Length: 113
Length: 114
Image (tube, rainbow over the protein chains, first blue to last red):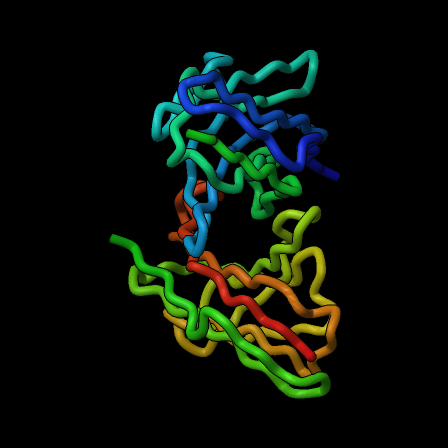
């Protein structure tokens, strides 16, 4: 079984401040971890992935995420948030890249000007 | 650019109606997926299809069926719509031999069953 937890329904930050969106996972075997973003009235867009290698992965739009195996976490970060980063963010996991992606409940990020 | 389109952005149906949600992709993708998205639950996989006329159940197939008669089109069918099927439905597709995370998602259909 595989699952993802996003402990925060909402994250509110001021523009220019650091942004962190939390994610923890549970999976048997090697985790493949992903972040997606959904802007209003748009489909999901892929942001970044961790498959293997460096624990800090960089993705689109200035986002990065840190894989922590001991804490089974994969938190999404951005050093300086923009108002345009306001969206719904999903963390997802797949065990050994099989057919199934398991998504978290999502975190709504609001960046105020 | 890959394009995944869904026939309706918003749909309102009555309880007991048969509902068809259509998804079309224009990049010759073999694999197609249907998810539903609910607040607090994230995305859950309903059905997926490896190729034409092939289908597999996902995590929550009850109350749904699918049809894949042509490669570009994957239909989700609610045989008898119920209010608990009010949700946002997302379609996705990808090439057979690319990683799972390389799915392209459509914009979604928000279905309300009254």
